[in-house]
Amino acid sequence: MVKRKNQDAVSIKPAVELLSEEEWMARRNIYMQRLADLKTSVAFIDDAVEEYKELQKQKLRNDKWNSYLACDGLPNPSRPAEIRKFIFQLNFMEQESCANEISWVLSVDECSVLSQAPDRCDRTRKIMEKSRPNVGQLYDETVQRILATIERVQRVLRNDDELVHLPTFQVRELDKIPNELYGEIESFFDKLTYRVVSSPDALMM
Figure (cartoon, rainbow, N blue to C red):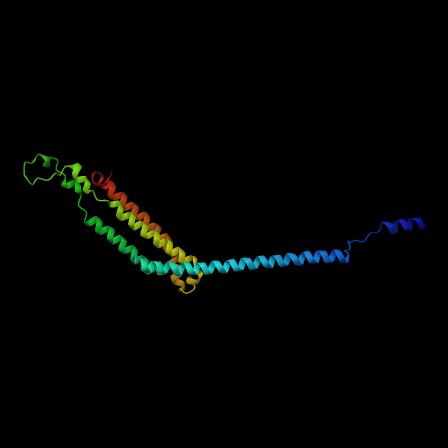
């Protein structure tokens, strides 16, 4: 009986493993070191975020100043009404270009070289096609101006410091502007295509 009691005493082990004071201190030091490293990392991230915000503010100021110096005629990117007025002006200029266009093909006269008049003018197709208008230039400049406007609008939308000073309804309208402008670009490409296809002899290379 005594022998069995001794065996039972030996077989009983503590349910939880106990740590020595040295082990506990070692683990505590590791934990505290990790916390310190984490705080340092968070501080670096906070500093980087603040530096990024400051750089964005500086870039915004530089862009505004460069736009002012350039006098490029682009609208204020934070004013949707001004941007839509700008698009209306571009469409009006395109319509004026179409209305004032006279096909150079109408001036072609292959018989002009047969004239014996001293003031004769060579109006053969080979000569007259040198006056072919570059209709693509107007659309290229228009699209480039719209793309520049989109870039400026998106810059404003990414800048919280500038959005916070705008009324809510203005921010909502401004958020619609990029899609509207992309739609205008598609419209101008369609107009260019129509002009070229409808006058292949005059405009198609």
